[in-house]
Length: 80
Image 1 (spheres, rainbow, N blue to C red):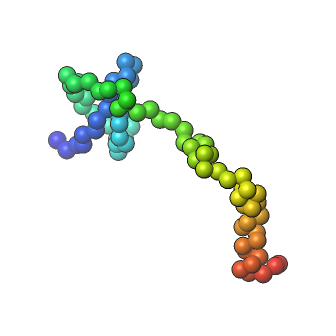
Image 2 (cartoon, helix red, strand yellow):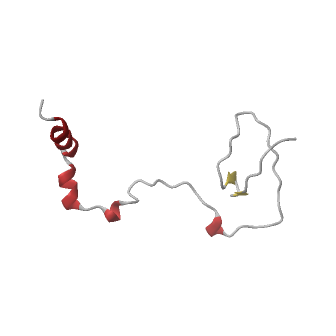
């Protein structure tokens, strides 16, 4: 039997994997329940990264971004 192993945990309602797997719909899986427990901090949940870099935003540079592509294209290729 060929296969792969992936770690996960049961959150009380669903089995959550801690890594991506290449399973296809209707593909058989084997679930082994272990006598080991994970700390809640090890359980990861999917969170949005939207705004994750906002702490590094520079409002002064944001104003310069407007029209930056157009200025760069005009500088490189001339005005049309």
